[in-house]
Length: 216
Image 1 (cartoon, rainbow, N blue to C red):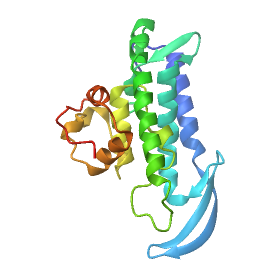
Image 2: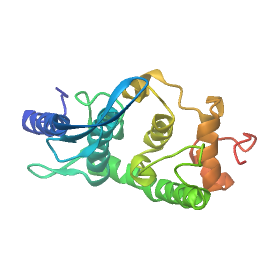
Image 3: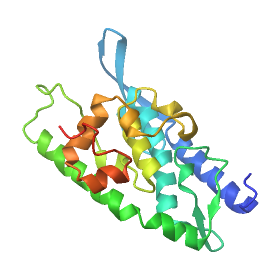
Image 4: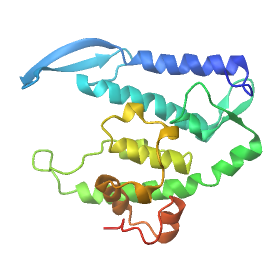
């Protein structure tokens, strides 16, 4: 338990995270065809989430991380206002640190800038997708893109980009990744950023040098 956090708040967060995870327990299955891997199923979870069975782990991941992102941005009322360091979103959920009001206010200053970048990316993506159909399109699909780009800190924004294009996203951690986008040789991330047509100030905010060939 963090030394700067009350046991009551710590236990409250543990219960909340456990409840979100438990909500994705599958309670019903409906067989719907098959493919080369076997039968396919539509499922419904305890929290009424419904979809393909193979999408449950992703839904659970974003359910927890969206909650953590929300409490970082808005704080959490528990015996008063409590502010949590942004690294709880992609770091250890149970080794977080708390912030003073002044530290929280400092983090808040970057959020509108990141939200502007996020919204530019989402608009660009919508423009890219407007003439695409499910059956003919072979490019990237990012359902719920706006809700998957976390603006609670620069590191979390970059991590959420990495998560979008990763197949093993459940093992991503802040402490074992180099977050310098110039060194991430990933065409998909560059494509996502390209949709936003970011200006130089926005690129620099994300740690992208002016020489990085990212806007195409």
